[in-house]
Length: 503
Image (cartoon, rainbow, N blue to C red):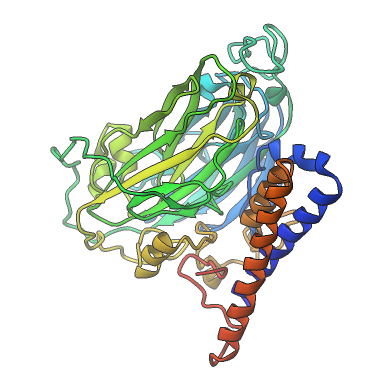
């Protein structure tokens, strides 16, 4: 049923777009808008408290949706034991493509009951000055401090807006982005932002392992993966990130100014990840945009590992991650943030953003996007956890994960199988929140937008669109016929990461 539903939605989306294009080609301008961020489907909507006294409790293994206004400082509560590590993340989501200051962003800290900071991190929009999802993380790690944040009890996640909410501070845009003027408020900085919150619990490990980071590893940049690219459409959030295996991948639509695309790569214990992103050339417009493109890498708990930017002048450009160490539990003991971030096996996320200012020089049309991904080394065994992670399997790479990366099937990953051990009294009870997200059918939305955009080209494009709809209908019929002959047809297998759509 899940597979049939996906194809039916895709066919309906394409058909509807074709009808709209035929009747009113003026609607094609809708395709120029960046795709909005896709929250996790079962994210529970919670309201952050302005004081620790009223903070709502978050449950491990769950994803939450909230919001924060300019200058906001919000509290959420955790009840932690004395043995497990806790990782929290907050993704700030301004309106897609809105102008913000380079110093604007979000800060996340984890504090104990006496306001001692266990850790904190600040994520800023940076020199692109273009509103896009940015994520910061914080943790409580057992054994990392002799005196603070070690005992069981109440802890607080504190999420703050940083930068200039009025446009007169260090985060003020300087006119390089459309709609921003020196000394006046940047639109994105003065609006409420959405928040996506995650909480992952990591159990203790068997004793006897190393407590120091590896001293040496192969830090040479390998040869880039070559070959003909395979099509793979990017997602618009962590929950809908498109899986990639080793190889050369090309987004079927491309990336628009103001848009952020998400991909994910399964990286096992002992494996080394290398990634390069390439922007295609264009014959439209001219000029030069500094810091136009940013590629960020996040680990399985959505902790930032590395990010790199590139300028764009209408010619092809590439940007690659720094050489990263093989995945090892002991990496967490390194003082280097990039090394410390490579402490888990699991899904690693690539977030690619093209700044809004690119549209000013080169138009609103999509720019070609190619990814080259390499995985080196054989996947090995994990550190020997004394218990289950929450969500379950978040630090594992299964054969199903590898198959998904090859085939391109998608699904929510942070939620995992947490509902099996969920607490009905916590805010994390999945499915109870209102307006929990728009990740369902995200690929269909991008397909429909592409069809609408193509509709403005002419009659020849309509013929191509007709063939597209015919192909989707034929494939759906073939899928129904195949499933009807299979015993138990209509029951979708549930994946390790809680994905029941296409896994």
